Image (cartoon, rainbow, N blue to C red; front, side, top):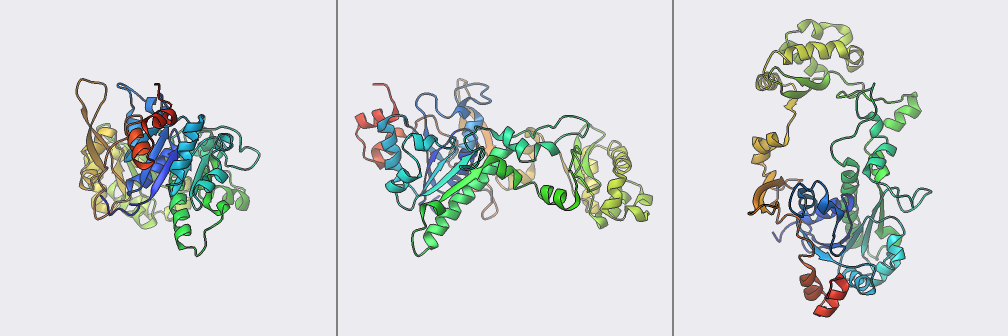
Length: 405
């Protein structure tokens, strides 16, 4: 599609793992040409994460969809010059190396700005480009702990748990894409070119996590509240939890709105709980959360999941099934909005397999924008980009890409 919002924007992605590639994926999804630079021979380490067969993981294919892959040896003079030549033709440079790495290679902000005055530089790192921890390495797990999230995940009487995905990286990637668009908007709307320090976007993983912790710190400073782990609940809000049904399936029910709560208690056959004055608000219901959850689960366990959901829907009580991957594939709502899109992909077998991948968010015109292609093979576009875009001859391409002669 040539009419996507970011068509005509070129992004040079110098990133591995999840955070920066997530930002690049979001930009690519909406039309940006994203040129992903990978190290020769091995590529992005994500190619081997959760690799069950074949030579490229579905995780890599998912996070690097709609991009072009080239290999460059950024430790060589030829590779570094190719980066600068590509930066000269790019609107955004995106990176997530440890602070100081690009500068050590002669590819820091000053060099990139000299190659293209006006380029937007998006930098994602564990703790940011400044401060006493800036030089320290760190993955999302550490950021989630230091940003306050890990302390709230899990059961109160057990050690902190982790979400099932690298949520810290994903949040930072969202900020990375937002920063890129913000930088482009600033550049295009300003009468004069913004200075380099205003075009360099500094995203720290731990700060990205902290930014979604709602009123964690204000509640502590204002009221002395120390939030704690409460399992499937949300502190101070009840009833809202996960419940097991009679057929073994599980549902999440959010019956915590004051008017919703009354209808909810009618549905489960406990009207007396709807009439008690001290249960009229969340504060009182939170104090009796164990009693309420016991009454709710006694009801859910008496019915199959489909019946539980049907009765709650009829009463206007927010609820939904806890989906597995197989459930998502079969879900009519996901299907109606084109949120699982299928491609023939090499999975290590004799023939490509038909594999569904997540669609693109946000939806435009009622359904997900079509994914153009899944994450490319390593270096699939090296010769096309360096030869076609930069006009390099074959010997210069081989030198820059670190290809063996």
